[in-house]
Image (tube, rainbow, N blue to C red; front, side, top):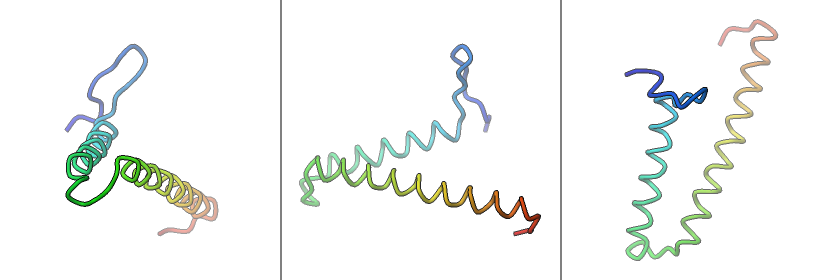
Length: 77
């Protein structure tokens, strides 16, 4: 798999970011079409995805801080 899918001017679309976005979109559409069967409103689904996105950002930030701290002290993990 190529790390860069295509370029639009100076903007690069990376393959891993594209496929992560595609997976999130597919999950959202899955829940959107199955919402009556699982008894969720569109607001509940949107809120669920926003909370998941926010929690991933917080966890990723903590992980980056942790890794940078390990590198600063030259501790191998």
